[in-house]
Amino acid sequence: MMKVFFNKKQLDRLSEFFSNISIVFLASIVSPVFIGNKLSLDLLVLGIILTSGFLLLSLLIY
Image (cartoon, rainbow, N blue to C red; front, side):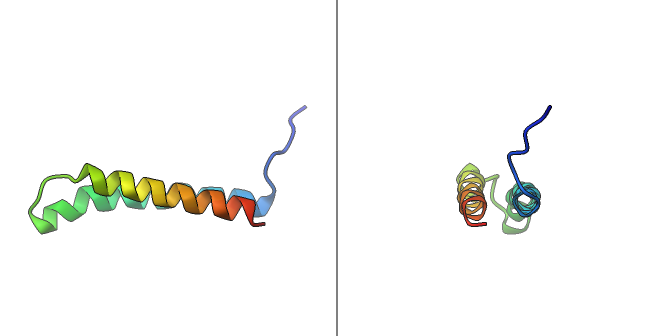
């Protein structure tokens, strides 16, 4: 028997987190094309850290 760790509201926030991560990856790949620079790994890491932090906050506040 499986134990449920997340309620529906937390699962919604978790799915929103994964969609935000995909936006971060897309923006870090597409934005250098318009700027004319190479891919910025710092921008990618910063975006992942920020979205992870917001995920933790949103899962703790329910």
